[in-house]
Length: 451
Image (tube, rainbow, N blue to C red; front, side, top):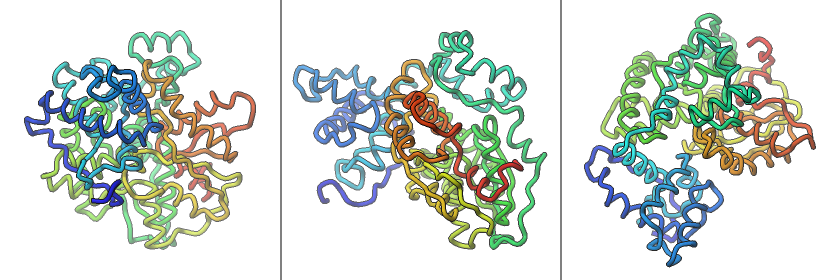
């Protein structure tokens, strides 16, 4: 094995049903081994806050080495990990198949899971992670929810911070007044019979919690763009993919979600439908994480093989069939942020590739983390760090000076826009909102105003 391993990274299944996985002494020994490797390399110092914390613990310890760090302090490193996978995908030279077999994110997940099993999951965090329940309830009182969660509503946000630990300044997603499932039934989408892909592709859209309960416009734009390109679509949301529970280390809940969603989607695959996940975190779960949690489940593997990320799907149609004519240049250009969980799918920069299909459009790519990390970045103890981590991406977007900013991850888009505002002040003009790339495709087709 060559130093640094130039081969593509591979990932081993997460052996969480083996008793050794839950052995704290074995876990601490493995963390010490991996942390010592990280200490000797330090290539990932600028990715997130986990590594600066680790290196400070080592450097400020009595020996200047990992043996001078208390095992109890290992939790400080894990707490800063957002499970973005970027150290594994883009930085670490010692990931498998290298003999050192370093998988930092899954090691942090193991620590989180062991602590969750030992001490239980925090009640408030567990409630926030139940996105299906909170999302469905929120649709009935969406106006009240949006009033209460607006960061300009100082009294309510200060109360929310005390009760739920959500930072008063963190921008939270708006609550939709109806689910995307209901909107899809109400609006419909007729495939364009003149499109090259007509009659050749049909897709079931896995709505995801975010699109189903918060930004239904992403789903509507997806259906419109795919219909323009002759693709028949159906919309389902049987359950959350479990990513919020994964972030809490609740592996049992994630496995249960995998079984539920897989059982609902497999009949569509049997009928010849492609599965398209509308947010990259959910696509990552369906395509990779579930298969690593349940490696012996053929149904989960079959779903993984049939699932596309949204941008990946549009690019696949363009390559295999060609896109319908009518795309017009996006004036002023686009700065597209590549979401970490899109990059973790190891499929290439599909969002940028998709937007470059629009003639005459300047596409600038941002490959730095937005800093949000799901609910992590909105927590009181993490928000300032999330802003700090997101500043380089925000500064890149401002420097690009484009008319539009987009990200495949809607939470990253909102956070990036907020950090841009905090970074720029009133010194330079900026876009008024951050879009999903598919919304800009709808704009390029001239159908944005019809959504």
